[in-house]
Image (cartoon, rainbow, N blue to C red; front, side):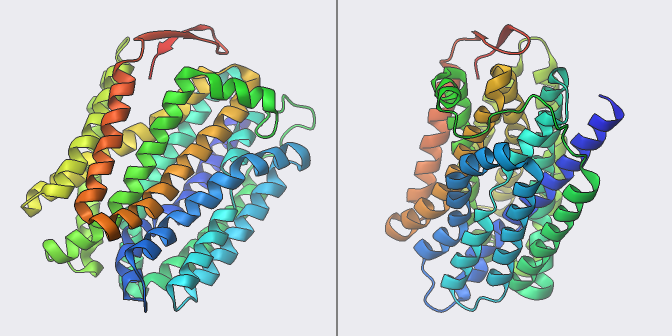
Length: 400
């Protein structure tokens, strides 16, 4: 990469990392702290967790299209301002309804597709897959940091402190995008990220993309649903005070980062990416089983570690596979659809997960998560081992 490309990619990855912190920091907290609010039910708590994803999913493509028309930076800054407003509303809320409203406003700042498109605007075609991979890694890193940082901040100032903290992160994000991120060239190969129906249709008809989009939906469904259960199990079943949860997440996450190394080595070997992908999904399946049915704290912590290994590997790998799969003028729309599926998964994991817990209990939610993970694994396993797809550099890619 050139010096400007490195600056562009690093600053946008940092922006994306800060943005995703705002989503991930509350995951291990809402199920615990929102339950203390008057009249809160599992369904309402699930909605509070998932409504962010619904707004993101609904607005990714429209705001991506708007960024084609008015520019990437104005849309990104406006989205961050909405996120700040939602954070303030949630921080000041004294009811579950106020939390839901704040999370709705946070989610309305749907900037993922505009950020990805700006990455593409500021990098050459031959560098875009690498750039998308860097952003994907930043998402995994933000998840690891947020799962530890959220409980640590809440231990000092409860849930409201976390929302105030995410507002500050969004302010820093505005500084990053206005000061550090270079402006896109006036004349550039603009990626279509929104309402071009022909391009969208091509993205939706690509079988490889359908598998990847289904996969990211399942991954984020399980992530969000898991955190309806994990914090409560830590506190009630294994006697870990909520102020001490970060002391559980920190060593587990550090171990999981080491655990990702064998998967990355496996993927680097010729033709082994598909195998590593299947192992990653299998780890998520095994982790959900352990988290749901572990009888000892040790087994529960092993389940957490396996989950973080699988999630972080898959979350970092999926965006680069999407970028690698499609031809140049479809990348923006493909990323828009991908982001929509990602956030729909987060919404469904929270909202549907809350309903399942309320109506069927914890075992009902665990069963659905296992069914989805199993279906994803079978879908990838039964795919052709090598698929010829249209890409910038034509050639076979693993059929994941």
